[in-house]
Length: 439
Image (cartoon, rainbow, N blue to C red; front, side):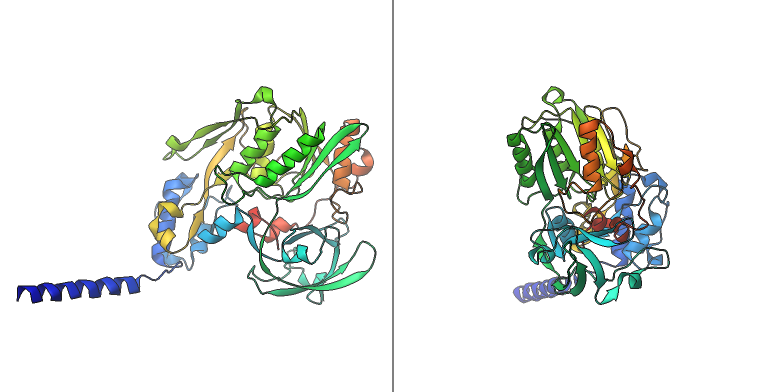
């Protein structure tokens, strides 16, 4: 009799155990998840003292609505929600979509600005400098919004979505291409070459986003290693780094680049410090330079725009106390703060595949410069010219950077080309896609 009771009890336990397993269904937009989001923000958010004391999470229809309601609006344009897969994939360059960017010139003609090599657009031979005349059979004016911006209605990044584009090529011919979105591995280095300027070897490096190579420990980019080896072997005297469309990415890769660019004499000096909220001061740290390679450059020229953000600005700010830096193009975006994902600290977020990426820290360089929410001002304001391919010295911003090397300044003809675009690609995106902007 005792044995039969024990068996009956075991069956009840097994029944309820199986029932519990069946009932644990991820519900990423549940009130339970919103509660975890608010709890995580209270603990980790850089401006946690600005959060409301109490939030009724049931008042919000979505996680995004909650987050938008509680962030510190005067300064926070950056905190976002995504999935764990999307976050992890983005930082190692695993993307989905067509794989290109575009921008308007001064006359509001639209051009491809960059194309990833292995993306559907790259495999179809698209190149920077192709003018876009129509999208899905409609003129660009059909996509203009009431605010004066554009919504090109290309759909989500899901593989299988098709869009068609009519291009005018540099030779004057036109072509219409249908392109199907797919998964691809993006490249960070869009172009590299050495240009001779009055006997000086000038490196030109177009770097698109700070992405690590998957599987590397410690975190780093093999593309960066290869580029720095290329410029070192060439024996360059000067370096132009083009970050005009670089929305940021991995801080570890930014540190890697800084360690290549710093002079040997400044190795072991302070690169940057980071500051967290008052609950997390024990996690604050100072990061020192650790020289890699033999490049020894006292001057650097960066080509920048409002699309240059986050890790791009961290590199510029960290090097500024030690290197003579010139910015050519336009003012940068203005993001002196950073994030890391919080799902690993909260099982509710982890189990429901919700990745919360709020602002969690601010950085300062060796001189204490930390407040650049308005961006870094360009030393020489010069208009963008996306109609020219990478390395074409008719490109206004490249020409201006070469002027600085040759003459120490930029001529009036180039300065007169400056315009501030009414719409830029970074305006189209929020959150993770703003950090890695591409269609």
